[in-house]
Each structure stands twice: as structure tokens, then as C-alpha cells.
Length: 135
Image 1: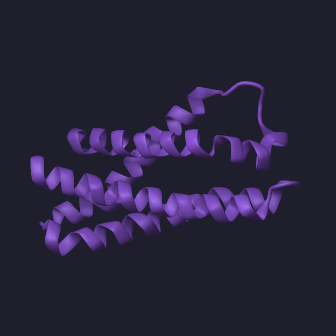
Image 2 (image 1 turned 90 degrees about the vertical axis):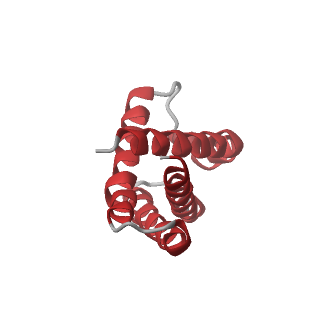
């Protein structure tokens, strides 16, 4: 595992997702407030980010870098690979919740899957470009 690549991924992912959650937090509370715990349990959240960053590196970034892909030839492919990975991961969570929870709104499923797709695609391509330029 490339430690620099992992840390870069974790940082970019965290900045984007914290910004999203800060911006959209009130909307998520309106949609899902009936499911929220009184306090946030940060341990599972930290574990998620550590694992998800690993997944982005392992399934998206490392294969692109192993091929010797350049920024010019690979940025779009890295974005698409990241976006597909994000869609699959977020779909697993959202569609499972949509299928099993009594009051899980369809809008949350749709918005969250779109966000996961964009978040992971953008994180992947930004980290790819940063890594290729500076490391």
C-alpha cells in the first residue's frame, strides 16, 4: 500500500464529504431526523473513511498508476472508475436501507447515490493528478 496515495485520498475524500455533510446536514435531518441518534458515534464514521479511502486506492488509483497512465490519457478513465466504484458502494448502502427501513425516503436514495458517485469520481481524479504531479 502506497502510504502517500492513501493519505492524499483520505484527505481529499474527507474535505469533500465534511463540506457536503456540513452543507446538507439540515436537509438530511429533515429527511431522516426520525432515524438519527441523539449523538454521533464517531468510531464507525472513522472506520468507514479509513476503509473507503483504502477501497479507492486499491480498486481505482493503484491499477491506474500500475499501468503507467499519464494525466492526459488517464484522468477521464480514473474519474469514471472512481464514479462507478462510488455508485456501487453508495448504492449498496442506500438501496439496502431503502429496501429494509420503514421510512427511508426515495429522495435520500437518489441524492446520496449521486453524491457518492461524484464524491468518489472527483476524489479519484484529484488524487491521481496530485500524485502524478508531485510524487
